[in-house]
Image 1 (tube, rainbow, N blue to C red):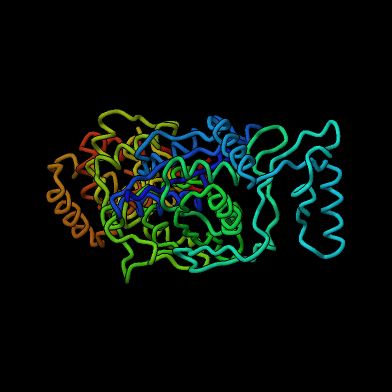
Image 2 (image 1 turned 180 degrees about the horizontal axis):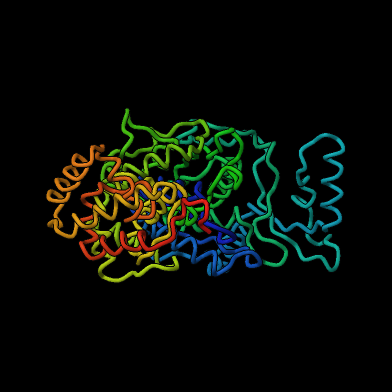
Length: 475
């Protein structure tokens, strides 16, 4: 048997982080067992499903590297098949036409709530002669669910779960307008797609009991079910915008790498010993459903950020340079040419050591694409007092005669500091402020070497030519 899993989002909004984890678990389970991972877009809610939401889902999955093995199946194209199965159930006596009006159904619900009972359909048309149907009422088709015994699901995560059939009513499988209900369409699609394992959030567990009855009525073999716990915020409440980013593309915009996010989501509810940093290849090798916990996972943005920093340091420098150039494209005042690209690439090793996200990385690299005069941070401005400017004037004369290699520059800076009885930092900090506009940067000798003599001296000259911002008379 070939293992076949599916991710089946509804395109009525963004691809949320919980859905992304469900897709990841389906993908890894299929890959681990040498099977296939499929995508079904459940777009039967035509009023709320949008092309934009479909595009966001596909873009998010592609960014995460969760590519399906077959083209996506759109549920809306299968309405005729869903109706065919509903009518087959009707012909076999496993379903019936229900002529209850909207008013009757509302009164039925209100009475149940008044009596403290769960609102369920009372089966009034279950064994009634359709000849008694009132005029002008288009019937829905309801499943004739078993009333005795119980329905049991041997869940691969939750263990055996069961419900008394008396607690389930006869659900609608085809509405009076001929459209299928979600619960019915999902069963038909999973069967026709030969899905062997349904891995989804545990908020679908109650649906599974009803869906199992459709499988039974059709004489179809059920897939194996695995219901994974939901993701909550750090406070234990359902994850929402107030906890931080919740959609996949938001995380991308905030500068997270897809491999870091997948690594984090993998460990959010699944474990394998003490493994924290798990590559895609290792995840495929190790993942199975027996490692999924039953308790709700809690989103920890600080842990995700730490994990992202680890993956950032391991990432290819050329890839990160391309990411930084793309993120800086909308920043005014930058010259994003081949010179800037070469500078960023050359300094990427020390730059990425300090960054936790691509946003931080781009911010720290922006100075390499600026032309003087550079904007100064408040701390950098405070450093560049008259004494620092005098120091920079003398230092510029030394740099003009120094070979621009990291070793030669480091030696020249040390000698300059010693000759003036200063610590190296007392020379390096105002120089760093002049070169970068900030008080933090990669090592100053490497920064000088990457900028080159002409650019470094031009930046120092711009500081010396500017009014003294630390003076009480400066405006």
